[in-house]
Amino acid sequence: MGKKIFSGVQPTGNLHLGNYLGAIKNFVDLNNDNENKCIFCVVDLHAITVKQDPKELKNNIRETVATFVASGIDHKKSVIFNQSKVPAHAEGAWILSCVARMGWLNRMTQFKEKAGKDKEKASIGLYSYPILMAADILLYDATHVPVGEDQKQHLELCRDIAQKFNNDFKIDNFLQVPEPLIQKEFSRIMSLKDGSKKMSKSELSDLSRINLTDSKDEMINKIKKAKTDSLPIPETIGELDKRLEAKNLIGIYASLTNSTLDKSLEIFVGKNFSEFKEKLSQVLVAKIDPISLEIKKLLNDKSYLDQILLEGVEKADLIASNKIKKIKEIIGF
Image (cartoon, rainbow, N blue to C red; front, side, top):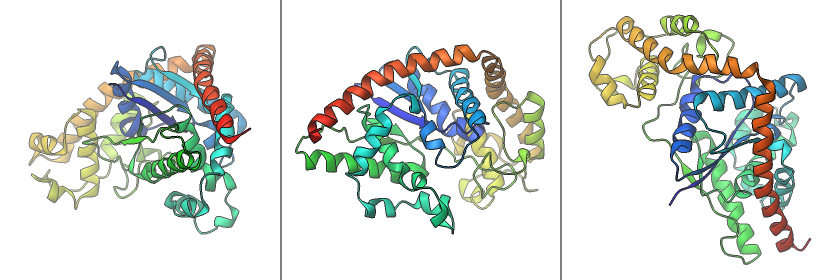
């Protein structure tokens, strides 16, 4: 039996190779498996936990949809929509925040990392957004949610909320308790300038990341300038573990070629990095350049992107408003 998959992506704009290999490539595979029902949500309500420029946010929502479609997600087979257009998300978040417990939220390490030292100045939304995330998932009876390491804890919270709601109102399995979907053989994509930091759009140097809208020449140049060391490529992962930048580049090659670190090392063992970078550039350009060109083309057709969202919103609203109606009946509204 197929899975019912829900996943959300923040419309931060300027999506990069880390987003593609860590999430979007996996979405395409899930979407192509005809047994799965996939719901892909542009989580614009989550985006406003930190202040956004309204004009930029609107563009970023469209760019996220363009990236999904350019990467190969079929909007006719899946539901692609933006969260703020489906009122059930905000309603569900409030109801579930009356089910969740302070102690559960206080354990969330993401808030501590994002709020930093001055957590008194962080928005309430940044603190409580894992409850909105739980509503996002539970409204669609999702059986599986693709998550990275940093979101595993939030999915655990979602599971706790679902179980508590079901127990409180003595209704077995009314809220589906979702399972995590964790990619096998996936290396976390790190900065091209510092192998200890995650690839991020917030890093100042544009050379630290491959943007999905980069041109062929920009990609080749960034790989050429990517930090490595002077040693040849080793034989074992154990030796690679001590060489963060080298491990990152080989991890990128493995992910792009649907291979493993072991197999990639076998191909390049003993070779120097200038030779390896040439091969990596070829693979990268072959995979990402068509996506980059398609994103640019789609961004010139805003009405087409808006139409995809409109169709997705209608489908999503039908499912979510039905679920929230049942939730209200159970609660006694």
